[in-house]
Image (tube, rainbow, N blue to C red; front, side, top):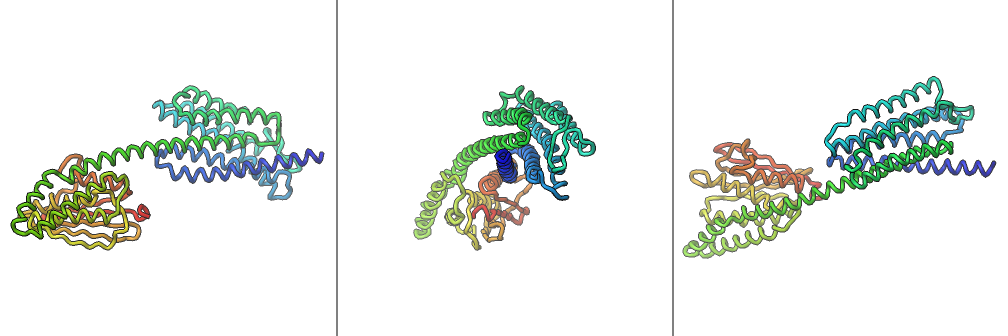
Length: 442
């Protein structure tokens, strides 16, 4: 008897450790899924509910096993409440699991299977109602004077209702099995087969909560399936992002280094050599630096240092100032350069101020002010001009004069989580404010 008692105690300790680690895993899984829910909010929330139900089940079983056979008022209530929660949460696991897998199928096959879910809900509610009745009038299980759980004649109903719920999910999933991914199929098979095997074994091996352990394994496999799916979504979005950035950079390069801009700049420098050789040579050097700076960032897939972008923009403004005989004045108030921006971002905004603001005035004379500052939670860049202004409501239309603003706003949001606001008044000028989150450049 001593050997049997020691084996029983060892089995109890092993189960406590397994379920304790299972509960800890549920907490970690919920935190991780919460961080990834942006990819598929509905699916993530459904899995979180599934894991929460299983986590409470495991914690309850730990208390039920840990205080089993102990005496005292506290242990008396803990054992009863914990066992009550184990059975209730078992049925809630079925309900939340059915909802989770049903939602996956509905999104894959584009059909409603609400009837299946309603039947599953009814089965779960029947099970919970049985447990509630048992708390008042025991017919499923009860506790002896040693504060130990034992089965009653109606205990088979607990397993029967649970099996019915699992079999219904199995029938549903097998009907749409081909619509699931490889890992989802594996997780689904584990979610259905392991609890059934555990129920059978538990009938012949009373004492160990095999169903709780198998449910824990199921949750782990479902979590792995979810994370693989999330990784796939992340990789797909990254590929799309890479393609978008590549195509956008080529388009931007063409737009920024327009043939007629280069031609007009070279023509102005050519004629300027007859009147002011030093200024013409400086303009030629600035044009070369502008072209080199633009070509250097063409292959960049990430944001570049603001100082690099600013240097290219300064060269562009110097060339424009030379071309238009100093009709464009520039003021720089640079207090912060310790951050990154998408390539051509500042260049596009400054070019917009020159071409669609100042050069549309009569006479085409104006002032551009570029400011940067560290606002604590974000790095701010302002581009202010006293041009003709424009209707901001039409600035972000798909096609139009200010299409560069729309594209720049999209690139800021996509590449660094930045924002861009535009204020413009007709006949007064335009102010564009860019905010780059500080943690993006950490």
